[in-house]
Length: 496
Ligand code: NAD
Image 1 (cartoon, rainbow, N blue to C red):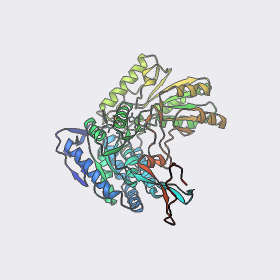
Image 2 (tube, rainbow, N blue to C red; image 1 turned 30 degrees about the vertical axis):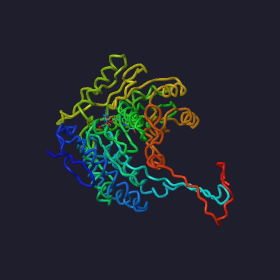
Image 3 (cartoon, protein in one colour; image 1 turned 30 degrees about the horizontal axis):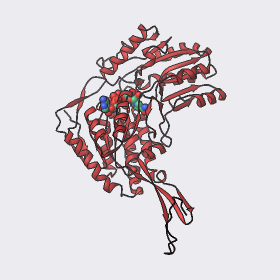
Image 4 (cartoon, helix red, strand yellow; image 1 turned 90 degrees about the vertical axis):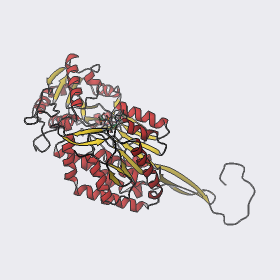
């Protein structure tokens, strides 16, 4: 059985841990590999190597650091399909969807290659007589990232390329459910010319994360994952005086105005709600129909009936299995709760299976109407191919419903009215808003700006905020004397 290596101090090494977790193909339960939970000594070795390497890496000129990212982006493109295939096996995504996972990560690496202009500070001459002030953005030191299962290429690539190009060293703790993709990312990073020790990859669960949260050498933590874990990491990390950015759970609403294009609504809503088996933090889980738009539910239902999940290399498969049996069971229990609590289940995917892959963690597309805000189906993040439809009379009511949600990751409005779009984008208390765009994930020159209960921290992931998160600003106030005639001590703090 293949044991996933650790990547410590530039070496891919086998862990001495006896604690191993199976990496399972969710379409057929085949055990692909075993991932070790790194020992305390291995965690300490990774942290020590990252700390030591920082001393030399921060001195490497920014243009050289950026050039590694250019090479890395090119290598990721060359190996794009291979990376996507690894994702397909360990996570079950369809090939097209897996390619998107890789591509959206490559875009961040391209942004990292722009670091020289993004890391420029500010300057001002003559802030006082013959005194100039200028600032530099300097790296923090050792940074760490803890990533979820659902984007094993894109989300690690949100983190380590930007942190490292800024001059930091980085320790990645990827999801134990699909560590094979991040390991391939690490191999390609070495091939791109990354010096030994700038990136370390360790494996495990809570105890390994705790080590990162406790060691004073780790200056900043990036986390993406579920709300409970994110809250724990944010609280413990900040209590230990670290910088933390934590992108967490979501419940994203799409509002449908009766003046929207019906065919666009149907196509976009079906894809955004059940695509990737509903395992996207920006996927749509609640559709809010305004006024007569409720008449379109029949077409949505017909759209759902045409969606056929399947295995990754079936070109006609709309999406793959859920990541684990536990995830599937949780989704089924939320579907059952919806029925018990009085919602109408128009399509129930609980008993769905794929011929020849009966062992897979399948959940068919599931559609509910008559959902209320008190139901678990509405309150919980389901993270499955389940859409809850709700009906309101006005755009104001839709906005109020969304603003009352504790989450604030993404939302979208479908309309042909500029006035409605303007009102929605202005009044909605959600950090990423799509106007006739169902899943408005910003490209990496912007930042990924979830709000409220979907994000803990202040500087968001990637974009300019990502660069700020991984750097410290140093401001220098400078005067060069033209003579050595002192005019007596200056007893005030005014610059003269
Ligand atoms: P998860 O929280 O279970 O795991 C995320 C990471 O945390 C993994 O590396 C895991 O090993 C680690 N972890 C798990 N339990 C821990 C604990 N008790 N202490 C410390 N670390 C722990 O999340 P998941 O199931 O892998 O991913 C799905 C979740 O991620 C969903 O809630 C989804 O909304 C969220 N997500 C959010 C975004 C976003 O940008 N907001 C993006 C993708 C996924």
